[in-house]
Image (tube, rainbow, N blue to C red; front, side, top):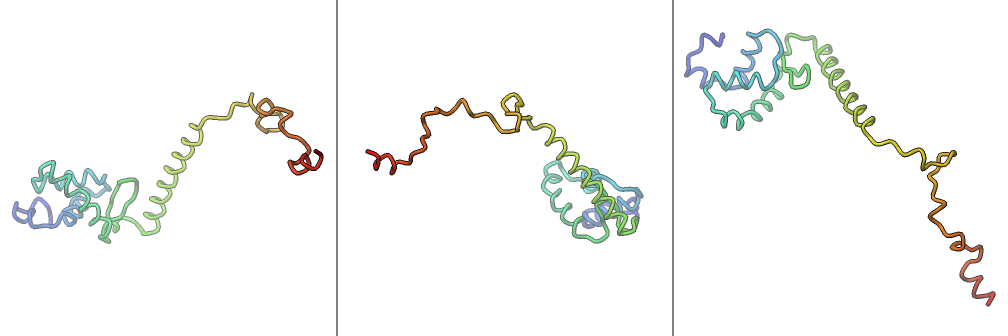
Length: 147
């Protein structure tokens, strides 16, 4: 079936996930999820409100349908285009790389400790916060016995 051959009634009656399949099949390359939804909305004549209401439904259907495969962040293709291991490995590798990049950014964005407040042995210097007379060698029981 070719989308150009369908009349308005056929398009209206065809499930969004099936139209998504035909869009990808005709394009021959992966598309961003929002691009797929945009094309479906155009074909079916959805308003912006209808598109927003149905976008999660289409995402769920594409995820469940075995004909589709995620090959990148929000990038969907047809499973038949990829050997299963290649598609899975490349998608996982890309997602892991993006996660590592985000973690590195977060790590280097954190404030570094002020090295002037540190002792040479690496401990924070709190010596000025305590009164030397505050800590005695005697416990309270020993003080009572000595009286």
